[in-house]
Length: 99
Image 1 (cartoon, rainbow, N blue to C red):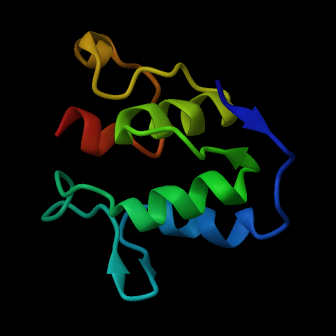
Image 2 (image 1 turned 90 degrees about the vertical axis):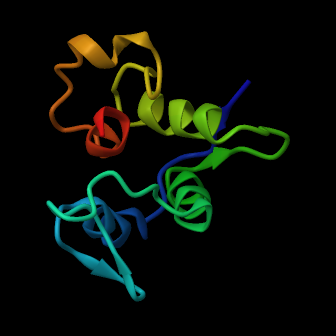
């Protein structure tokens, strides 16, 4: 369903966007006061592109996030029943998912 074309050299810069309290292009990422806010679709698409994922035709936000999770070596479990037992502390979606 998802195809990886290889990591972009730009992905390092984008990783900063997913660290708590960082600012990227005017967007505030997860902090204690904003941790349940949804990551904008524009940033989700940008992250997918930077990971080399072709997501054309993928219609749901959750499916794109699942593809990103898998590409980063995490279980593709965003917004599933696994939220109650999640131990993937390094996953950039953890706060939003558990929020």
